[in-house]
Image 1 (cartoon, helix red, strand yellow):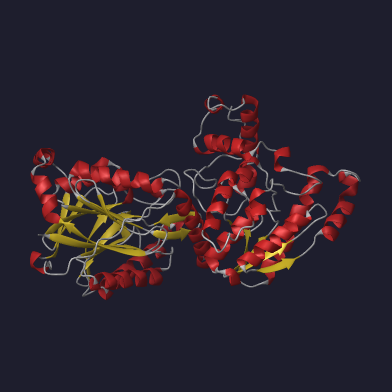
Image 2: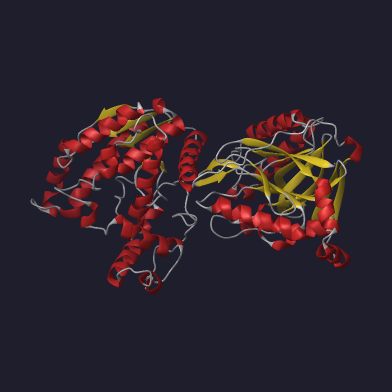
Length: 578
């Protein structure tokens, strides 16, 4: 029975780390060779890392990428054929896939569907490809596509019409909650509609605010997922595609036969390895367990992966976190410890005159549970001095919100000073998406830092994720129960609660989601059962605070529409959204 042993190398690349990326590619190729693979596929733009953004406007970057591709080809001599994401600059710049074998680049495919929405700006850099590529590997016809090509019917259909039995799809597909299931349904539809097996390889790792989740899959020609890579970590998925089964299904597919008769698709064909090189006497592979994961597990692991890679890829090795005793800072600290290890995390307690004894104790309890160092820097003297200086302007009695925020900004100054003093350290901020949406986070205060771990995590989800993290142990968990259960408060004035300024979070968060992520109108949100005056008030807060969000650090994207590159709005605008 004819098979094609496909290896999908979901590796964690770094933009611009040409040597490091090349070593990862070669390491996976050698591992695949030991497993008897007939070909090894790598993610989109694996040579450069994804997304390179405006590095692609620099000729020197493009030239260096080509030098490293040629070096990779030479070093890969003797290894199985590689299909590697790369650049190709001929008359224009293309997002490409190179077919590498016998020390040479045998041919390249150019991506045909260039995404230009959400976090993608590929039309800013790349020319559109026009030609279908089919490689003959071990007697099997293998089509090549790149990422978005598989999200549209055309390119996979063109490959099948050109004779492909297996289509390899190279990806750098960013994560958001629920996307994996949607992605698998889409790939399964492409496979069954075109009667081809699809080998989908996806990048893994964090790059700035994006997290790539891996979850590479092999789908047979009936549309069934038959192999799956791990989520949120590097993996090599090796699987035997039963080509005879694909051919049998294609022979029974009248649609495919008729499309082939009428096809005028431009096709580039490459002979990579002859049929007699296919090894049919090798031992069969053991079944690969299909991992089933909850959304909470994926989101938590995405936060950990995104935080780890951002800190380490930007050259830092230690983080400071302001610990208030509340749920947000406790959760961020847990993520940081899981990402970097307790020895690379320091908690900073900065109590004011309004900090409760319970909150201070909760912060200490958290630090002990996590095994992290803890620094205490009371801010009462700074707070009192600042109020004295501002007394003529703010008044001697109640300085209002400005006086409250002096505390937050004092804390921001202190924690940044600690970060400045310790080499290669940064501050992780603790504001959540609900607060960023409504401006309930202090500019130059608790928004100060290098990375905003939960910037895209609504408050209600912070609670869910905290309870999930505690199920992972040790004991009753690392986040104190009191931090999870007590009413949230900024503790900037006596007896303050978040609900003094905001509706309950289980009311607020659905409104924020509807307006920010779904772009719904006031009428549509009210139709979901919310009070109209409240909806208008929340939308007004969201609109007014765009200038704050523009100044915030990047953070992990885990929803379909994150603040930042996902959602681009003018700062000076009279449109109110209602």
